[in-house]
Image (cartoon, rainbow, N blue to C red; front, side, top):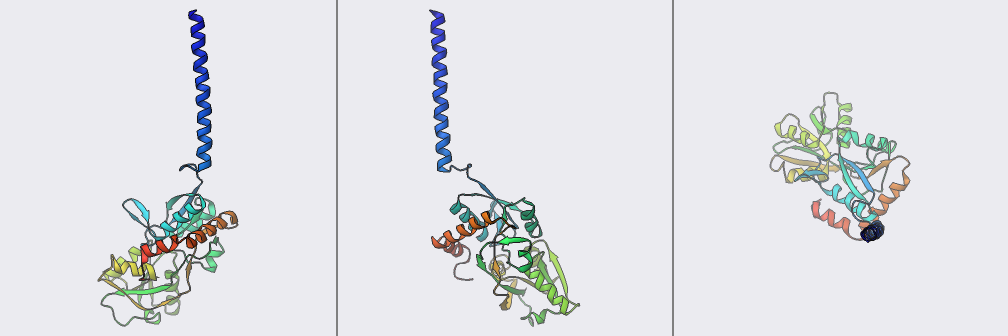
Length: 267
């Protein structure tokens, strides 16, 4: 009798485990169907995260216009977004070798860069501007910068513009920094005469860290410059998803909310 009871107990236990396994299987199936967090594909995104208000660190988190934008695109297309912080000159190589799936970092679409990676549809029109110390006079054009001491961030269109000035006048010196913040610090110290950089970033810097220390002069130039999201050459599937997500957030108003959050009506 005891043996029978023991066998019955074991049988019920096995049956219970079987039902439990079935239940877990159903839960797993439901989880995959509904796309629970952690089971969605991860989009690894490279960015140079020292470029406020586009991408920077605050409270241990990566924040900014570009960060909100790529996360909104990821949400629209069913991706979880993981940000990989790299130097600006490492962004394109990271996409080329597959360390990152794409890069977003206020990267102007240029013919030279388009030879190395494919770009999404443009998502922001920037342009360049000259920044000088608050008491500086006599500088308002690119020609005024010939023979001066300039600073810019490595790999940027601001650096390219600075180098063109030096080509016209070899007496011009160009200091290159890993971040635009370092270039602005050099300007504040008086170690350089001007910084050439993207207008919205310069504008934000003057409103915040550089308030009362730095000013913009002259007109915006290269005003047709547009930012794009970079993907590996030939990765049309990802490129189409990014473009699709970008269009979705423009259509549903999310893009306008992000723009208002970081720039308001000032830029």
